[in-house]
Length: 298
Image (cartoon, rainbow, N blue to C red):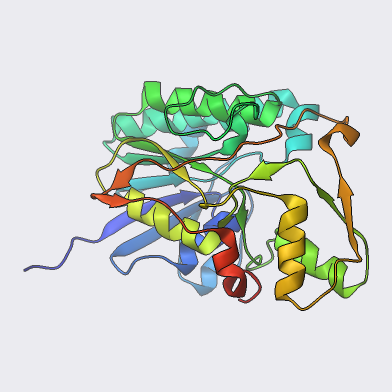
């Protein structure tokens, strides 16, 4: 048998947290290009060509600078801070929805496969668990604009897949940070860890998440996929499990309710179910608690 043809994959937002794990678990038959709004020195070390892309402006003329043929786009770039989206809805809609629509049209015109990174926050959180056929009903601007991005991809792209992520967890790489880094830092400094008892999600080890997105990207599967762990847990329960693994007590853990937070609406339970298959194999990821050793190591 001949060798599998190398695929050229463009990752938007290549300096971001999830993208760092995409690079870490990159398949051998993939060549990566990237886009970023600002220069990112790590790519020079890894010999990755990175193009400037500002999603606050029309992306189509900017994408013309990419003079290499692209087979697949992994669209990770977004305004993902919930508070920022709520306080600046125009920015959130421009980046998460309109820029996604422009990118989708670019991909369609060039016969490029598009993989869109979405979120469990597209759901209201009152009728869990949610499978891929469930109707989104976002209650905050982040969820709303990511759902608008999903709609744009489905309308504008020919060859696409949408992966909804459920709280990817792991240590930050190359200057990025995650909930796990915050958790460890506060434990080390003996600072209180305030965690929700009623925000429930199917958290996922981000390394496993990256592997599944590569699997999806290199397949011919289309439509919506849920990239989630197999166990629904609230943040406070996660914190207790993490402390137990690290041999720490629970004295720094402080329970808090979503009802105590009034800055913007937060869905209570957006637990996801994965019912799709990729290349005939289930897409289910084990519970986040089965990856504790990976979560706290680099």
